Length: 425
Ligand code: 2M8
Image (cartoon, rainbow, N blue to C red; front, side, top):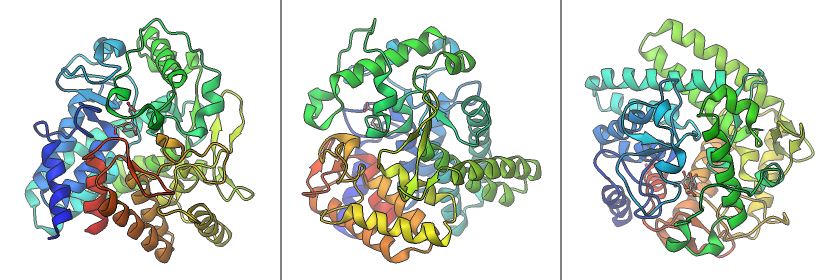
């Protein structure tokens, strides 16, 4: 085992708060939804029991209606804003711990399959009951997505807050977010800029809008039907839909192993619906998949990494195959490390500002996976190699400047460590 693999494992141990992992110390002091799903896969490369535990701690926060919240506040901390009092979700979730009121990409089902497959190769028949329990939690969350976030039956699931996408200040949300008021009743006490330079974080006006949205939904008492009608921001997101579709395929795989016939049928229907929805979002002229602004009714054409995420779920046709390869190569041209989260030729590109340009190891992990699934192994190997090199050069940082390769944002970052372990596995 290399020293760097050791270092990656040490980061997961350092960020362990008792069966769950914080993304990084201080900047993100709670359990985040998709971070933990990625992290559980990292753990699975060397400790199956700890991998299961990560997901088990996450579902402690699952709501009665099936939603898996984006943050689980297991223990109090004053190093992050907004904390539990701003969310005020207590009446939607009667058990402890308290949680935020929105969700995040459902990588959970992908993670469960990944760790279950490793457990099986290790001959761990004892994980069956744990797998079954987590499978049912995932299934309830997929039902929630379909019912609550695609009520108009487009085959695409919607986000009601940019934080749900995980790509918080992506240029993809600019136009839709500009319609949201900057007026808030809550005082905005940002903590993030105490840990990381403001030049690498969202702007103050972004935070005002993020908090305004929280207030709108809080006033709906987090009732999903009321939120859907009141939402001033509503986007059918291709990245979210692709992750949900892929996680659904992974749950079908698990259900087949567990011989759960009704569940296979139900999930297969969901899978078909989502694939149809995704296929309709391809644009030849842009050489990628685009999200849909449900308030303006317009395509979101901004070139972001989301263009390529559907590859994890669908098989491209011959034309798309070539187009995607050319487009990714174009975005990486001249970069020390690709794939940038915003195309470098776009006027919105900022190489150091969070989701507006920097490279994210977990996004590259998804892109590599999607390229392999679509028989573009050569390009996948290049991106995988670049990601590993960037981490080895700059450390386990939150994100990387694609032009210089510099490590940015938080340090000793859990999902970057997990990405390293999985890509190296
Ligand atoms: C970032 O998002 C949080 C809000 O959820 C924040 O900036 O406060 C995003 O990068 C998100 O994708 C990630 O899950 C989270 C924790 O790493 O940080």
